[in-house]
Length: 202
Image (tube, rainbow, N blue to C red; front, side, top):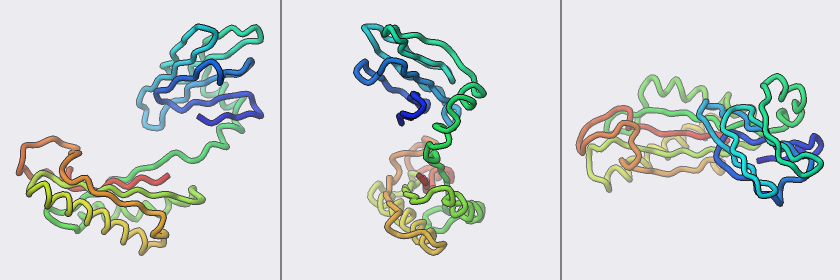
């Protein structure tokens, strides 16, 4: 949540949250914005003993002069026309890249080498980008081996990003091994989609 005090608006990105009464000033409005990925979200607004949950894009809640909590709906056009300055002041939303590796290797697939070239332009809109690189493996090999391999994959990506001009101190790395597969499999099953790193830029 980021309060746009000049406009008297609290713009809420789609998610799950609650706005308790002490934070709801009179003549204050809440608008639930759609998430960038299209996933549904919800927001509960509480005021004066009344609770209202907003769960559709551009649903609104406002505290009237007399302290009443009133709900309604708006449109993308109405929100842009009224609160365009507040929307424009929001920081860029995080972007994610998923890159894949050859089996039992720290070598990117050819397709992912091409995808890596898209990361640098994505940073242009971030004045001080922070990057998180998380490595993953499939379930071939021991848990200990895959923990180490996933971290090496993340570190390999950090090296690639540094080579294209990103400051090393802005890149965090971690390895999750085989614990968070995109495609659940039995043990010792090779699954190319699980051999990956996920890069988040924010």
